[in-house]
Amino acid sequence: MQIGIFSVGDVTADPTTGRTPTEHERIKATVAIAEKAEEVGLDVFATGEHHNPPFVSSNPTATLAYIGAKTERLLLSTATTLITTTDPVLIAEDYAKIQHLTDGRVDLMMGRGNTGPVYPWFGKDIRQGINLAVENYALLHRLWREDVVDWQGRFRTPLQGYTATPRPLDGVPPFVWHGSIRSPEIAEQAAYYGDGFFHNHIFWPASHTQQMVDLYRRRWAHHGHGPADTAIVGLGGQFFMRRNSQDAVREFRPYFDNAPVYGHGPSLEDFTAQTPLTVGSPQQVLERTLSFRDYVGDYQRQLFLVDHAGLPLKTVLEQLDLLGEILPAMRAGFAEGRPAHVPDAPTHASLVAAAGGAHDTTVHAVDDVTGQVRDAEPVSA
Image (cartoon, rainbow, N blue to C red):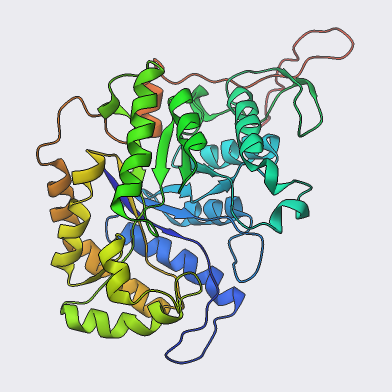
């Protein structure tokens, strides 16, 4: 079971002070949060991708590469990579490069994005969101698995004899999750390819999450990848905790009430009753999180959103310290009663082992005159 955090990179005013961090402060805070995640023993840090204010999470590859250089163990991911508005050729190159730079400590989550104006900024039509997600991922899947690709589709120029470089590390592409809140087509896409399915699990009731995960599991089995309970599932979630639950509620309430997404809507009490948001003591967060298995079954990845709605960096780091304290109990709770045949979360090492071991897939250039592969020139001392 992988446990970690994700950030959407929002630049939001702190409602208790009225101060809004600068973009520079928010970007640096993202790095500090990732470093803290590794320090307290978490497995994963993921960053979103947004190209509009008030977010600083554009170009997630730069962020992940920088964090990768400052960490040693942390698995780096996205939440999400926009497969609709980002060219799959660029995704293939960028994430294979990060794979090499981090020695395999990277995977990524594909998503459509739900900000309408962003689509035309990249020459796309949001009404084609699902079709773009399906076609672009089909191309990306080939680019990582075939040395030379000929391709033609609806939404980008054709490819003739194209080789994406660098090739995936050890001949194994990064593992892919497909993230969705409400689109059954994306659950189907994840199941078809035998990829992971990640449900955001923040704004919707448990019954909705259960339906989406159940659909993915059924389709996973239908496509011949194994029993439904061996499908690779990830969940989002969010919490705010203090040692005393009343302190947690009192401190978090102004942030909740003014949050850009759900502020000025349902009360904090109603929202925590109807969604997975947990505001309370560490024990309450632990128990609520472990209860997610009651409606999705045993799963592989749990990520929490902890740094949104204007929460200051100091508070976020305190939240991670508290999460670190209950992490051993959370791991033990997830492991209890877990059937032996339910797989662990994929890692680069496990994917390499499943592929029969590492192998170099470097594609060497062909001499335009002789048609022969050029031998590498020896490097002089």
